[in-house]
Image 1 (spheres, one colour):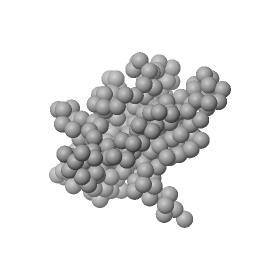
Image 2: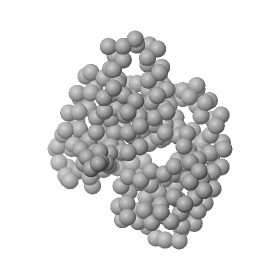
Image 3: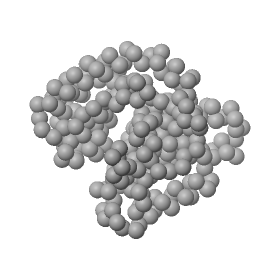
Length: 252
């Protein structure tokens, strides 16, 4: 039986130093990813290091991440299977070429959502430019603008929630379901509904089933938006003290 794990990266397999509660020089930490200038900014705890070694022994590991291609290249782990990037917008094969079947299907429907994304983003930019501390950008990868992300220098959800409640949630393209939002810590994203990890993972599972008569799948993630792709798998792995863990722990 062939085993696959679809593995979210940030805040599942590693995280920023602020979330580690340890000094960067602590021998219990290992650097896992870097900023564009070469500065180490993501670290794995001793338990996360053990988890990686355990998974690498028994699973084919498929990263499922919101990172773009450049940010993924700065992750220092030896992934060998396909890769899901940009929250599911892009799939790369084992040779790190674009999966043309997936991309062709995406581009058949994406243009109408792109226009709506820019419509929402114009209002987001106007709001952010009126206040101090916001960092906002449209994510462009493979010459396509896929989605938008906003952070704030205070590092919490509180200020982002004001933008979310005042501008994003009431927007007609959010209300009609064309776009959706996701907030987790200091990261607020606005995405077209066709970009999601669930659809990309479903596509890969179907392709793996054609190669392997017996397939065992695991999904691992920390965020509420990871839950749909994890639900496609036979088993789910959720790190403690994360958004998804808390949502399930306190669900009635």
